[in-house]
Each structure stands twice: as C-alpha cells, then as structure tokens.
Length: 182
Image (cartoon, rainbow, N blue to C red; front, top):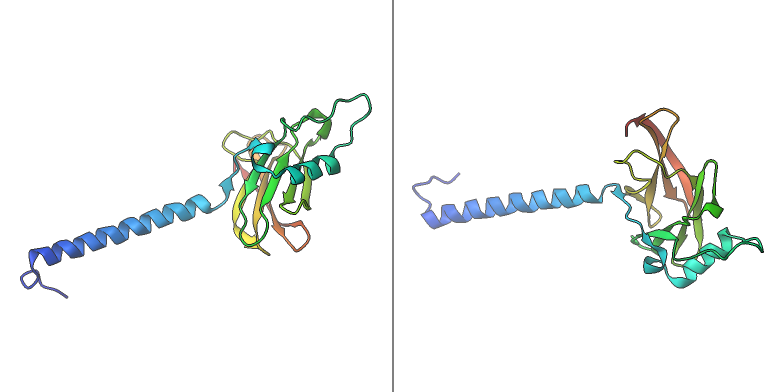
C-alpha cells in the first residue's frame, strides 16, 4: 500500500504508534471483558453494602427466633452487591448463622433495592478452593445479570453449576451443568 521510500520516517513511526496503540486497546478491552464474565463474588459485612431497610426486611422474612434465643447479630451477616444493569441493585445475603443452617446447607437469599426477595436457597458453601459459591454471569435477563451457583456433588472434585436468571418476579433455574473439578 505504502512504499517505505515514499513515506517519511515520521509517517512510518506514526503508523507503528497507532497500530501498537490499537493492539493495546484491544488487549485491554479483551481483559476487561474476560473479567466481567462470571465474576466471582467478594463477601463483606452486609451493613457495609446492603441498605438498612433491605437488611431489616431480609432478617424479618427469614429469621424467627425462639424466646430463649438471642436476636440475630446483623454484624455476622455477609453480603455481596450485584451492580444494576437497568433496575435495582441485587444483594446476595449469607445469613452466616447456625440458626439458618441445616443438614443440607445454609440459607442464602437475593434481594433488590426495593426489599423484594427474588431467590432463596439452602446451599452448601463447602466447595473446592478455586470454586466460588456464587458468580455473576455475562448473560442477563430482564435487567438483571444471571447468577451462577456452584454446589459440590457426592464425588470429590465434582461441582454442579446452576444458572438462575430473572424472569419478572424472581430468579428461575434456566441451566444446569456438572463437570469434574469445574
């Protein structure tokens, strides 16, 4: 297209600079896109990320204490905030208390900014080290990202992944897969 003899040295340098800059931008964009696909959750104290009214509603709807029990310590509750795509934010809540655990696992609930319960599951948080209990899918439906939930199977290193997507009033199981060590 261009012969080197007709292009001044500064022109060649500009083309090389632009080509390198474009490659860097594409590379950075690809890294960002990969980091967005099924992001692992990072749990923090719920009162750091969940609005007070949402946390109060979650505790009230999911925990009824016996007279002999102490009230649920909200400082023990963990949560992960899922940023909004178009609508309310989502809050995945790990009540992190023996009172809301059983033989099959512990209670995890997903609420919106509007204090609306959209998913509630008993899950076993004991997974292989490299596997996150919850991850955020690149797929979205009805304004919310889909949630991928991992659960261990009976066999060592076998993990099932369930994809839940928002269907208007709550999250619904839309896909289920399993794999050795995945």
